[in-house]
Length: 415
Image (cartoon, rainbow, N blue to C red):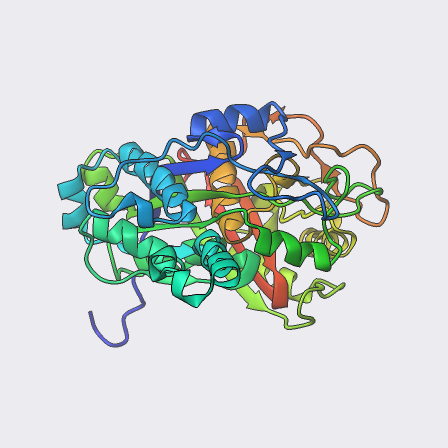
């Protein structure tokens, strides 16, 4: 390549998908429950949540804990097992053998806010109740946020070191975006990417102190919305250069075509009411994808259900789409599975890709009373959309971290 040659821009195929949420493990179980508008929110049993603003969350029960060959399971945090479940499904979906995966030398890019915080809590409890000498270091060998991706790489003999994003609720989307750029620009031929987080009392107490947890139902964009609901889960995607995927006969599950990010730094927790950073991320993602706003047929909203966030995101969407702003279908899946924090962007990106694949829009559960201040076309019941081709997924986090991913259906024109 000559110095004045344009940079390589390859199409990026999604060839593997893995997901686990409070709806269960696997994309089939999750998609069926999501499209049916089922709620996975239930009473928290992992710790005593009775002293908080709510006692409900998208807690996972009966996780099918995978076997590990190279790591002692007793030293693993719950988050490592969450990630492993999603990874195993994505690997099976890709139809790559373990040897083929290693030979592909993929980068590993994952987002999380908590890492192995459940193990950290166990260590802290032992330290306080039993004293420093009884707080075993083995309780926290899987605590730090880079440990869970490292466990996967060790287990499958993947080369290199993981790239870990931990910028609040945009972490998973930014991890996917980073991997997308690396594949598209020719740095690697394949990437394993996504996000994960587990439900623990530390984060529950934190969001309780911010008074953003709803004591009732999470109702994104509804006039009576009064807060969010937490959840846990993991989403993993295998991304490949389109030509490589085609050459090996892989199934193309979708196409990632654009990524945009921004930082508005308006406030530590409250979003910029004008949505300047959100608008910037969405516009950048569409420009990166080379498509106009008119091409977008669905927006999977960040949609937390808090008064400030939803008003900001609605203003940003309306500004982006102009006169068409009130016509573009919008929904949030958080009322069904909760806010997965660092895992949200990856899981919701997967749901967006599945919507394009299945030509169906997931509903915005619990939406009953339109908010005139939002003015969006909220999907209240699952809809079939035969001509859905392009969709976007938003992730907006604390501190003004904003990320948007743009997807195209597997049978898209690929222009």
